[in-house]
Image (cartoon, rainbow, N blue to C red; front, side, top):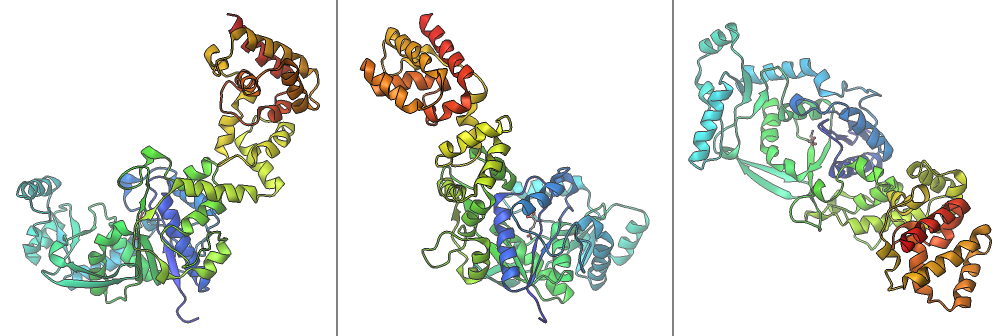
Length: 474
Ligand code: GLU
């Protein structure tokens, strides 16, 4: 193909990969694969102040964990590398020089203090803070002298005055900007490292990117990018600014105060990559049908840019749980076993084999296992009142537990033998099970307790009953 579709994911190593960025990567991947194009990964690490050590490696890993392997990028290279921006500094210098020579960018020698002061004055006057362009007035001679004297500088882009820029977004349609609202953006910082705006344009062009998907928070950057493409005489890739995620549990943007927001965090909580992907496919895109369960291959096939949604996407965690449940129930026993093992490393293989059929239908995410099976690995503290939650007389509770204790000499037919015991004594079933459940699990909300007993074993079962009896006797 002459002009293959080339998409890219360009995360910054400033922390864990946000779940919204994972959706962006998914759409990038799907479009590239659908069109037999390439999906490129580029690390945008020009903001050294925000660099979080190790996060670059983790970004790569989490994309792989979700099955989004890149055709070009870090680790594997490619025709248009390097794919890490700080390894491309000489390239940016070369293109920056071109802009300065043409008069589309200029040196700015203003000190940080002066800029801060000017900003404060503008803010006080209720104006949007913008660079006052004082260095644009410097003569070529003055610039030369300043450079010769080693005065620190940045390079800014020259933004034309009062011009309307029209842009066609693949999601939002026509968007207009007035250049009076655009600052003379710094393109190169005093340390010789470019800013995002400059590097992204140079790289998207040199890497022959045809489609850019990114979050809608980047929309205000578009006029700067349009101008840079124009200054260089380059064709701008098509852009799709994807809707933000809203978490219905709280107002405003998704916040980590209300639950994990990182791609890695969801894996750590025990969401399956396939379930997460399926959920993300439908967050900002819709197939136009009722179809909800999508494999990656089906999504690649059905994905259409025209079906991207403009409206904010509701990140409904209950819906995600629903998808996760579906995908958990579809796992093979081997895979299910591996997940149980991963989340319950202290459990023996025998214990896992007992727990799997009991819990498989109940778990929403694998980290739930840790809480619901805690009683198997430690004696949890609880109050005497909890044992008597159903208004049980302490004497009766003692009687129930003492008699039940005698059943655990062997673990066969437990359910029937417990029911027989209840019947013989004419106990209330609900009452018995509350006392028993709390004694064994230390909580009133538990998985089916009798089914879990074989995983607990005789000794621990009896010990737990003794602890409960002690509480009741004191
Ligand atoms: N490096 C930017 C980020 O971290 C990428 C923005 C873009 O895709 O243009 O989100």
